Length: 469
Image (cartoon, rainbow, N blue to C red; front, side, top):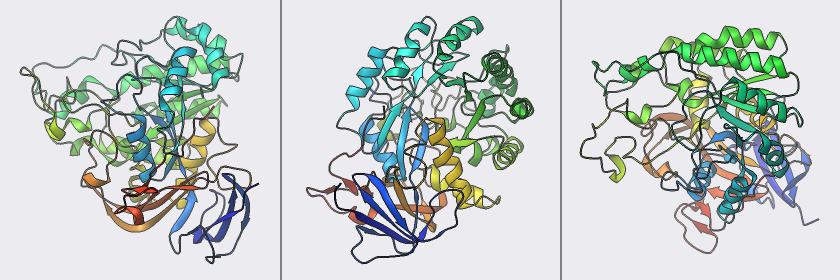
């Protein structure tokens, strides 16, 4: 065992069941070895003073797009953005990389391409597509955290949706390992775009993705979850439609192994505030009304919704039909066309202050924050034995931040590749100052002006993240 390093603060939150108070956390070989409930700054490797030290955030829904679409994002920029926001673990989605992560070979290609580029720890979900049921158990054995499928068009040809029969084949395989299955829960209900309406108006797009698309899909998810219970835990990704909440509550009351996530954007933005031509707000399922947003918050606070993630899904500005960031639009493109623009919101690493700023006005506590974006996302990703809480034997993953500090999300704070996000220039409460991954500081605002062998613009010169098997 190497020599212990001490991380101390006057304000430490170890997990969602404890109170904030002074503590010193001792770390060796990347693991927490012991915890003392006293503030001991002398000789500490990191003295956070009065800033809050809590578990690093686990973001279970990120699109890194590597290999194959690194002009959209890549592991270096995605993990930099994560680290700058106190996110110590990201779990990548099986699309929009090329190849999609739907075979063991594709899984290994992704893992190998990430080596030497991770500033935080990274794992991946696999994908369920037509015809790959026979690959699923081997992918679990290789290290996939579970699987995601689409019940509607995914937007990329290499990741087609599955129907009920194909789902049943896949879930029969997952049953052998109690493998988790994630659902993009939208299904076709016959809705379409009204071509007589202005495509640069957000309402034109919103009306083409009504809530019943989610309700229909979630009814199927619950049906399949019931059929394979308790052996195939099912998870609804990025819930947007509050109309689906009664069915979800009933399924949970029945005891089905069903979990639900929503995203920072559904909790912090409403449809009424989306400006015309502002395609950085477009995602699928869409941001809905203020009344819908309030119902999502109620469901989050009463436990119906289990966790919150970013669903960081970036692309290049030209695909957003947006002229920012040096993007060039095609000659026949309509700037700000919500109907034709790529759907996805860039937000990895900026969720902590967004959730806290909006949530504290609704009674959200710091303990709730840890539960929603650290603990439950770690459980969901199958890594709760090492992530999500500060405890002896777990990874020494910490974020040091000032919840009360004013924070304006300026472009210099956006470290993902393409800086197009609806949050730019948004004011919120809470600023991350240091991020620690397995006992190593990988981000430190006090090093922002340095460029030397150890630091570059606030980030450690060397990546210290690891692949999660």
